[in-house]
Image (cartoon, rainbow over all chains, first blue to last red; front, side, top):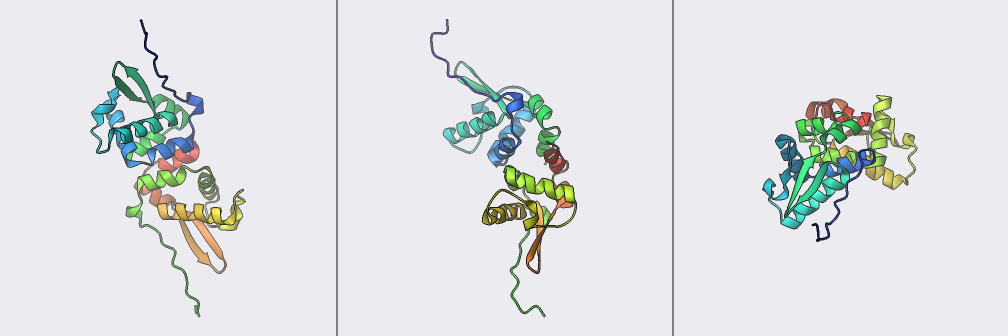
Length: 104
Length: 104
């Protein structure tokens, strides 16, 4: 049934998640907002639901940085790209880090 | 007795320390090494004592980024620039963050 080519959305495996990339990804205030919103919602959120004061392409870039760092998981559902926090993977790799950042 | 002009070494006050700047400063592996060495030594360490595989000017740059982010304190003593970790200030601003990063 899937006649259209589906763009692969690449994610690092848990053991490939690197501290430097995670810290860099979290060092941007807009990306920190995205992560805080995902942490508060506990579920999947489409990209359009974050109401960020930036252009769509900037927004897409921020989500990409977060995904490539291993902080969020993205999947495509029809026209929506759904985002969720990789809380378990982050906690396993860097215990306490995400909580400390979200608390700050 | 101090006849020579002393270059002022500027530090952000505790309340001026920003999460984004701290995370950015810690996102570099060389700077993370410096911070880990300072955390392990618990005292002041001169810049030359870190044995980093980078040029002196790169090293100076890394220390500057750490100082401006509020992560380290630097003071000049004769020809040596002495560095120490602002552990108390960081813990007060972002509880658990530094420990989580050092544990990673």
